[in-house]
Every structure is written in structure tokens, then in C-alpha cells.
Image 1 (cartoon, helix red, strand yellow):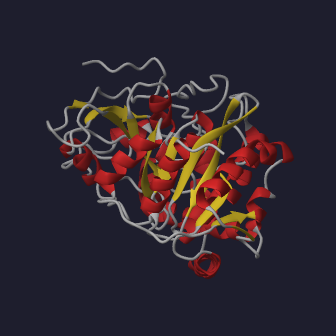
Image 2: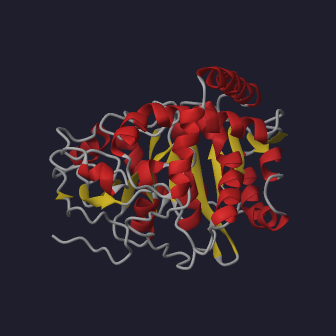
Length: 393
């Protein structure tokens, strides 16, 4: 069966269609997988034609994909990713930019751009992505979707092309909170209970965004306050986001070069200049710098544990704004990426789970808010997302 690729979200290298097992909890649902996940008998392309040409077909399917197939969901294709997942824009110079149906003149966000576009456009019911520095959270914000970054290490990463292993996690997109949770029942295991806690509003994160964005998110914050109960305002990062961002970038760059530097040196692949530059910067990071950055990461984890108790929900903006226009380029793209990473790097540094809720709008475009919690609190967030979907103040 040929894939419907009118949104430019599916990979051109082969139609993949695998039916799920009959009678499973996800029977009747279709999904797509980002082209970082191995599918037995197919070459994983990782968003780069030279990667595709220099790798052999996978000998096994990634366990996250296999679990979904075993649960009855049908795989309808592999989706475009930004090259080796090293971007937040959703632009791929080789395969194009998937269409953001929520705002067609704006970027879908990356690096899980194709997965987000396929779900937003109704081509599949849900899609797998990965999140290192925001690659599920940002596209979910841009395309008006629910998206979850799971606790680091919660979902197995076998059969997955890495970017930075100590930050990489499996995540997924849906158009509704119920489906988000149904996928969680397969990939995370049975629902778990948590004590009632507070809503902790990260004031310094809201200070990073423009006043009009805070105004747009306020009704949603009010819904969270009404749904969760007691509220508390806290400073997530007393050291300043420049410090956390720098540490995140150094660890990410170092690990990305460790993962792919040998292949890049040998193959000399054709890459987008900005992505090639990021790998080159990673090549220059020293072990001493990574050790110092690791101390910052440890402080970030300690800070999260200091401001959150079991059952507490952290609230922060999902992004620095609505999806940027497709005309974004050069210095503007760099500024957008830096502003975004200041908001998303806490997820990677602390390993916490985080869900983007697509429940606001600005400039006629989707705008998300994030809920997060202590590592391991994925089910607390999924339950709250379902509650909020049917909750009015």
C-alpha cells in the first residue's frame, strides 16, 4: 500500500507497511516511526543520504516499535528527521521540510519533524520520535500536538541511531491525550499511582518568554491551578540558563562526536552547514570541559529534587514562542535555537519526563505549555494530561 505523502513527511527510501497483531490494545490504530528507529530488513536513513548509502539493512526491529506492533498498532512508514537529529527547526536540505498543517507557512520543528507532521495532518494516529534537546517537545508545540519526552532510560533505546546517549529518549506524538496514554500503557507499562502534590510554576522559565506569550498561556496556567490544587512559585535555575545551556551543549556535542565522529571523518558526508558546524564544535570539546559540564548537570538534578516533592507537577512554557516562519535563516535561526534550548535543556540535564500540552494559541498558531515531574513520574503527567483535556475552569 503506497503511503500518502502529500505532506512530505515520509521518507522516500521505501514504503514500509507492517500490520499489528490482531486483538491487541492498540488494534485499529496506525503509527509512523522516525527514521532513527531500526526496522528489520530496511536501512535506517537518519535523515542523511550518505548515512543511508553507507549502512546495511537492520537485522532486528527496535523493541519500542516491536512492542507497538505486538499491541496491534499498524506501522505506516518511516518519517523524515533532521540530519542525525541535530536540529530543532524541522528543515532537511536533502528531503525537504514536512508541512505543518496547523500553520503551513511555519516550520514544523525538529528533529522529529516528519513524525509530528504525519500526526498533525491525520495521516497516522500517533508517531514515534526521539527527544534529546527538545525534538518531541518543540514539534508538538509547533504543530499543536500532545508530545511526551519520557524519563531518561524509561523506554529502551535498542535499535535507535543515537545523538547524545545521556540525553536521548524515546517519545511520541498524538492528537489527543487519551491516545497519548494508550501508547504509554504499551511502552511504559501499567498505570502507576502518585501522591497528590502541588503545581510548581517555574517563574524564571516564564521570564524567558515575551509578555504576549505569558498572556496567552495564563488561561492554561489557571486551568492547571484549578486541576492540581495548591500552587507554588519557584526558581528552577538559580545559576542562570546560560550556564545550563552551555553545559548541555558541551555534553551533547561531545557525545554526538563520540557517536558519529569516526563515520563523519571517514565518509565526509554532505550535511547542512549548520549541522556540520555543530558536529565540528563537538569534536573540539575536551574531556575536561565535559567533566565540568557534568558538575553543572549534577547541580541541575539536585535543584529539581530540591524544588519538587513526589506528586508535584512542574509547569513551564513548552517553547520560546509559536512556530517560526519558514523564512527563518542564518543568525535568526541560531537565535531561535538558543532561546529554545534554554527552555528545553532542563529536561535533558535532569532526565525528567515532560509533556507538551497543545492547549493555547498565539498569532493564530498553536502554543504549548509543559508539565514535568521528578524522574519516573511519567504516568502522573499522562493522567494529568487526560484530566486537563476534559477540565474547564
